[in-house]
Image (cartoon, rainbow, N blue to C red):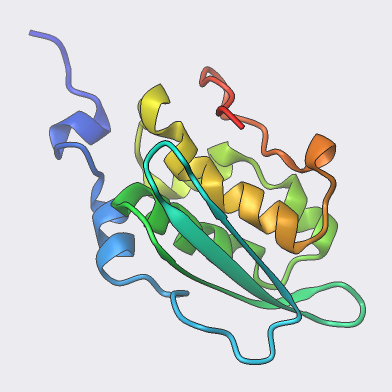
Length: 147
């Protein structure tokens, strides 16, 4: 009998994904946001809007999100909002999918990787990063998402 992967041991979603989906810490509108972007995954219909309060020196003071998305996408957006708070624009864009996956404690199937990466592409839009440089780097061993 083979050993189960962490996500297989608890079904499709890790405990962290379930918790971040049920009780996201950064979900809700951000009055006074000065950078906002939204995108949708046409394959599944996930929709995420990220709102940022960026200070004059470029530090992200706060990040919030809203949307209609699956558990994985919601959890990814929540973790990403958590990770970018207090960072500069460059530091935020340097985050990788592997950083979010590490917090989520999950192995995501390639067919669901776009659920994880959608918040990254929305963040890039909100920060005004050109598409050629704004796509997140996939986690080692995973496939790049369809754009």
